[in-house]
Image (tube, rainbow, N blue to C red):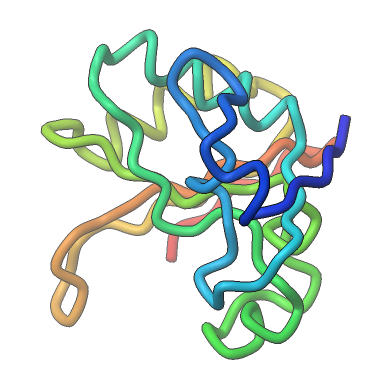
Length: 136
């Protein structure tokens, strides 16, 4: 279920044991923001499995911010259904492999390994209704 929040009013509110509204906010500073509860559940499952904090490097995005960062035109970030994440000490492949167990026939998983010009890797996860996989 998609939920709307105010960055200013709800920023410190807990969405689960480990995640607050502000962690999903668009990096352009805009208000409001949107977060799908299924995404929060997915991220909480990942947090519980690995036992380390999940760092959300990109959550909800406005259409303008998505375009500015080169996101796909119909990015799941714009619908509050996606997050780009990192976990300290957990390689991209290991994180993506575990996400596969949580999203076996659905959702999006994108692998973005560290490479020249990209100091650290990340994994994109989303809760779209169809299955999509890629490497960026």
